[in-house]
Image (tube, rainbow, N blue to C red; front, top):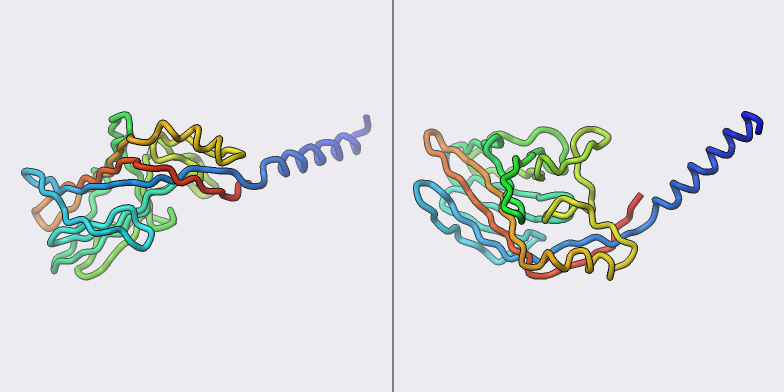
Length: 210
């Protein structure tokens, strides 16, 4: 076979394979129930509001308000400073406790996983961050990333050709729990916030996949 036909043949194979990978798949979002506590000496429950605006959990204490949305491939959090002093965000102490009870380092970045995570929340202001277990990250085009089908239960992708297949893979996730743990500091005062989620239902969704 001539070199020209070999090149054309490989080009055709690449085109066909690319077409096979493009299209739509079914992944799994979850219906979640959630609780939140502040750990500072002892544990104190946070005031939990009815979630709105796409968040799975909205809660607050006297100094800080949180809104957290857990979805395939990401945990989006908004943190608002309700006090009169800056709040430092200690990302080195951020943790994720997975459904198996494993304590994992939590990766943090700016909203949309674009740039460094903010380190301070000024009085009266709000920051948005992207969170995901560090050991579950994949290598993206511009750095660490998660796939849009990665499950927050175990980090594995659910990307199935049918809704039924996605449900079959995720059915055992009902009743499983996981936690997001954040450390905040005001001056000399350090507090840990623990946000606990339990899967109470499945919400399959169809996404583009290429």
